[in-house]
Amino acid sequence: MSERMNSVVAPGRVAVITGAAKGIGLAIARALAARGMKLALLDLDADALEDVTSTLDTDILIVSGDVSDLSALTRLRDETISRFGDVAVLVNNAGITQGAGPWDNPAKWRRQIDVNFGGVLAAQHVFVPYMIEAGRQSAVVNLGSKEGITTPPGNAAYSVAKAAVKVLTEQLSHELLKETGGRVSAHLLVPGYTWTPMNIALKPQGIAKPDEAWTAEQLVEYFLVRLLDENFYIICPDNAVTSAIDARRIRWAADDMILNRPALSRWHPDWMDKFAAWLKAGH
Image (tube, rainbow, N blue to C red):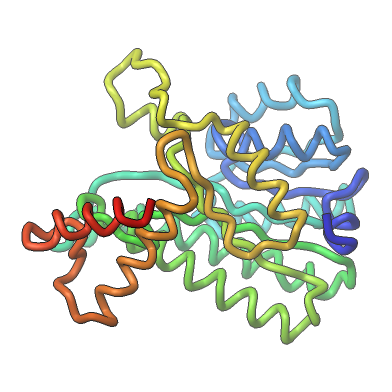
C-alpha cells in the first residue's frame, strides 16, 4: 500500500459508490466498510439499498436515484458533504447492459450511453471539483470493461459507452495530475467475467455460477490490492482468462490499426485462425 493511499482508504474516511445495492458495487461497499470507511451509496433500487444498511457495520448514507439524473447525483453530493464533510473515494460503478447494434435506432442507444458513460461524466462533474478544493488525498475509480478495450462484436452500444469511459478516465487522470500533483488520483477498474446480477440477468433462469466466472468478492479483493498500490489500469482476470491472455488480446486489438488489418480482425473469418494460433504461441 502506498503512503498516499493509506490515507485515502482509511478508517473514518468516506467512500461514495453508485450502483451500490448489488453486485460489484455492494462488494466494494462491504470491503471498504470492513476497513472502517463510512459510506454514501446511490442506487435506483430503493428497497435493495435499505436492505444494504442492515448488512454493513458502518455509518451509511443512502440516496435512491438514477445515476443519469444530475439532480440525484447533486443530492448525493450535498447530503454526503453535509453529513460527513468528506469524499475520499468516488466509485462510479452503476451500469446496465442492453443490446443495440450499429444501425439501430438512436433511442435504443440513449439509455446505454446516458447510464454507462453519462453517469460517470456527471458524477465527475458533481464530485471532482469538491475533491480538488477539499485539499485532502482522494481517488476516483471508474468501472470500465474489456468490451470497451477490445470491443468484441455483438453489443455495440455497451462497447462504445465503456470505450468512452476508458478515454474519459485517462483524461481525468492526466488533468488531476496537473491540477493536484497527484493528491487526487483516477483509476480504471476493468472486471473480468464476474458473476453479478447484471450478468445473471443475461443467462437462463436458475443457472448456477459458471466455473469461469469470479465472484464479486474475488474481483474486489484483486482490485483493492492494486488500488492501494496506485495502479491506474486495474484489469482483472477470471477463472478462464489470465492476465497474460488479456495482454495478448489487447495487443492484437491495437495491432489491427498498426498493421492495417480488417476491423475486429480477431473475429474476422480470414483472421480468426491466425489469432488463435498467435494467442496459443504466447503460452
